[in-house]
Every structure is written in C-alpha cells, then in structure tokens.
Image (cartoon, rainbow, N blue to C red):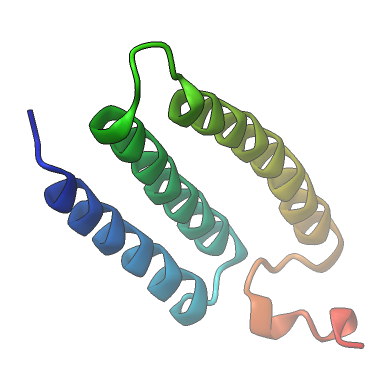
Length: 103
C-alpha cells in the first residue's frame, strides 16, 4: 500500500504540471488537457484520503471522485465543442490570436 504523503506528493506534482500547462501554453486544446490533468490530481486526492482514512462503510471519497469524473467528461465535451466552433470561424486555436473574445 502506498503511503498518504506519497499520494499527496504525486497529486501535487500533477496539479502543478496542469497549472503550468494552463498558464504557459498558447493552444486552447493544450489548455483543456491541462485542466483535465488538474482534475485528475484532485481525484487522486479524493481517493487517497478515502483509502487512508475511511471507515468500513464510508465511500465518500469514491463518490466525490466519480462525480468529479462525470463533471470532467461534461467539461471536456463542452470545451471541445467550443474549440471546434472557434476553429471553424477563425481558423485558429491559439488563445492570443482570438482578439474578438476580449471584453
């Protein structure tokens, strides 16, 4: 069994890599993938805390993780639909080239 600090360290590394991808990448598709990586880091935290501190009948961490996976699937579908619609209109998926979206 893997220790809780090891799981939290791995989750922190995944979250940091995802956050760096969101802030440093220009492509909207890579930004979406980085957000998914951050959500998976949160899921790892949910399951790690459930595994190391759950009672015999408690499945709260797993339920949170499943709910988060369902939200991530919806977010990915909507995000990909937006990226495809923007690409069809502007022929660009780089975020700094989309000046029309500025408020």
